[in-house]
Image (cartoon, rainbow, N blue to C red; front, side, top):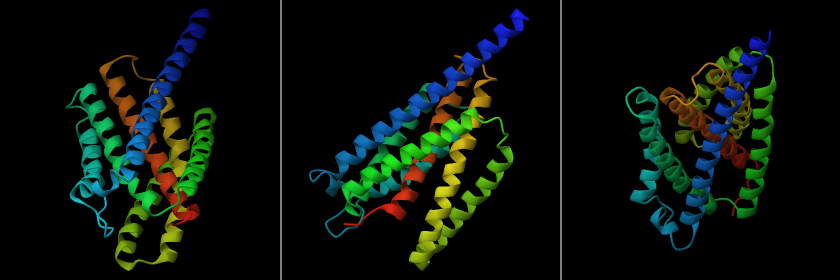
Amino acid sequence: METLKYTKSKSRTRTTSFVANVFSLMFTALIISGISAVWFASDEMKNYIITIEGDLTALGWVSMLAPLGLVMIIGFGFNKYSAKFLLGIFLLYSTLTGMSLSTIFAVYTTSSIASTFFISAVTFGIMALAGYTTKTDLTKLGSLLFMGLIGIIIASFINFFIGSSLMDYIISIIGVLVFTGLTAYDVQKLKNIGNQIDEGSETAQKLMIVGALTLYLDFINLFLMLLRLLGNRD
């Protein structure tokens, strides 16, 4: 009986440590993105991202497109590259994402960006706690949310050419629901992973980076969807 209790206690400690490390890395990436966004939104730096006419510069296009390639490197290079290399890619990704996010300061007021970020943080925190503590299996919900995510991507691509404000509004509402749900689902998935891996191993470190990237994307997309709904334009 004592051995069983010790095993369960050790498993809980391992899981808690893994999830805590994932969140620490995610928060670090968010801080990097925030600093990068504010810096490139300043009067001295914004012209490196957006021209006076409002078009993207070469660096602006790099900051918009390169993150997608970096995510693919992390995903497809999981088994090929070391944890240190993947960590470097993730930190570079967060920096470039911050640069691209600097463009929102040219569209929305600073106060609405700040208030929306706070709402996003509270919502994310509540759903993350729910995902970690619930005993309900969210696997089926995750499948539905993933289909919703695919739908959002397709609808956003179509609306890029149509330019419908109503469709944009609907996509934003659905997006908030999808990324709110994905937050709970992904945290539960990370909890399950932490319960099974060998703490401190190379694989555990890689999974921590992928987990942090996943939660980072959940938060950023939730924030952007809410900003489109709640943000006040300049």
